[in-house]
Amino acid sequence: MSPNELDPGLPLIQNAELRERVVLVRVDHNVVKKGKIKDPYRIEASLPTLFRILEQGGRPILMTHVGRPRDKKTGKITEDGQASVRPVVAYLENKLGARFAVPNLPAEGDLGIQEIDASLDGLIQDLRDRRIPGIYLPNTRCFQGEEAKGEAREKLAVQLAALADVYVNDAFGSWQPHASTYDVTRHLPAFAGILMQKELFNLEYVLKPERPFVAVVAGAKFDTKIGPLRRIHAGVDHLVLGGVIYNAYLCAKYGIHVQGVEEEDVRAAGELVALDREAGKVVELPAVVESDSPKAREEGRYRTRRIEDFARDQGYGPFLDAAPESFDDAWVSKILASARTLFVNAVMGLTPLFNEGTEKLNRVIADNGEARKLIGGGDTLQEFKTLNPGLFLSAVDDPSYYFFTGGGTVLKAIEEGSPYALGPVKALMENRGRRPGG
Image 1 (cartoon, rainbow, N blue to C red):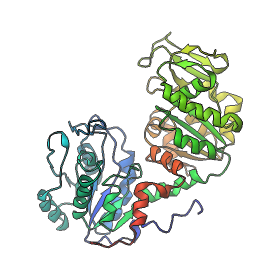
Image 2: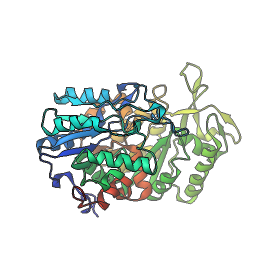
Image 3: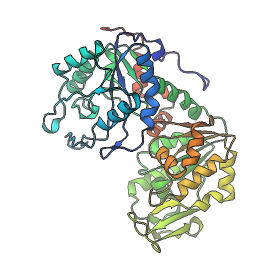
Image 4: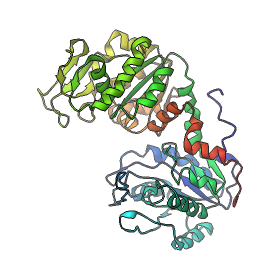
């Protein structure tokens, strides 16, 4: 398949009959931090799908996850207002000039919302009769069945499907196969939204890149990234690392000890060091910023360290940024300037305390006018907007740039080797052709 084609087996919203139908839409509006919207980019990116539904005479019911109200160890679900969808609803209402109904479905203690009961029947009828323009369900992760297994999960999928006539998945950033992204497709005609299509289209440029292909990847944990990093390493011409991932790599390669880097991360990084011994794809940034404290930036308590000066078995404070001068190094700058495809899912430093490396990286990448620049979502996008606002505004209208709404989803697709191997996307394709009640 060429990068400008979508798999013909993917059912598209453009081919769905929406008139007079209630459309259940899974979006990724996970943009709320401490009760406030951190960045509305994901909401804005989903608007074309919402406009399509409204223009075609559909009646939308939206749903998203927000944060992590469920404790993975205990399974307890706690919603204290920090993970509410109401800030998202307020933003949408202001944007569209239309009021969305948000049903109040009570939780049972710390078990979360147990079911969608008959209390929604009146709202659904109001939606069908056009007395309200739309409904926005509570945070999907506040439902006990969303991330559960077995009966509770199937029960939620059936109840969600019972609300609507058609299902649309536009939540590219939500790659985990949960009840609202995966199981519900077995019970309704299901289609990919416009944003989902756009993201899958651009994923092909990462998976089938024009070369030289350079990836810049950072993260807080190495052991969770080793799977996609193996795939990335195999597919790229050059790989640049940042964040804790780079800390762990330096520990594994040079035999040093860096405060805060866990032994399991060093072991995982050792696998990459071994892989790269012959390939020589990792482009080492020659200078890093060492700090005496990971929680503060105090004059005299941080300094630049050069890799060439490392001493084996020596202990160092955490490296909280890539020193900006690393990107002036002749070899590093040559690699970045010669790339024809750049994939960046990286914040180089511990922002906002140390952000000079990230800011410099953004500028160096922008100087490469020949490359297709594919930028991961989440923190990568947020820091780009914060640190280089003028550059971001110009990049939004620059066809050589594309900003994904889910960087983690891109890494998962790379690990799987195909965007169509992602659980929710696979579910859409497997249930293609389903009819209401089928």
